[in-house]
Length: 277
Image 1 (cartoon, helix red, strand yellow):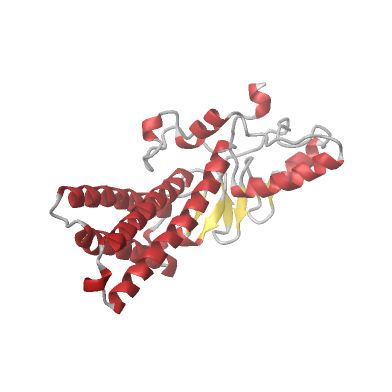
Image 2 (cartoon, helix red, strand yellow):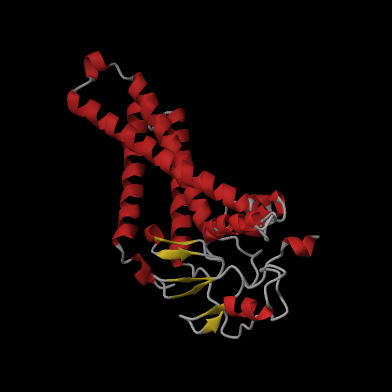
């Protein structure tokens, strides 16, 4: 992806919020709480700075990485009906793998993005805040961004609360200062709850090897299966650990590195329940 992705108001907004939260947390709250020169202050500022750097790195990778482009040479396997019902004709299966907008065949788990105006490999959704699609190649960076942002927000919330509780408001408290602390506390708590909810959602998706699009498609598929007296299970849901390693990688230490994507392959084929049975 090109640097023009950064020319977006939401992108500038994210950078502004990151910078504001970092400055307030480190240079105002920690300094006012225990002081930056103390061992506790240095430790907290070092931890928060590390989280902030990892958050920025994940954000940059998510913005700049192409989420996944369908190879021009891709041709679907006509015999491969593992992604459709056993009763569905192969002709219909082939038609379902064709994108009318791109006038080309698309691999399994690929969807057309109306914003990017092309098909995206293992598309999860188009994210306004990174001005990019979240797909096969940048999903890990997106997940790490949410993870580090959530931890950082919770850390900042704890610092705000600790600083507020420590102050003797009878002597040092003025109304504007109280309003400032209250506003910071509410903002940090709101960020923590919002980001924490989003993190929980994507942990659920990863452990079930789903994308957001596939989750909603699965609801309809389960309803249709129930009407026919059948049971439905997401075809790519192999096992919790295997699902995690397919997204984050087999090396546990590299799960938290947004640039570690050597485990990813071509993005056009994926192991299924039928492969493991």
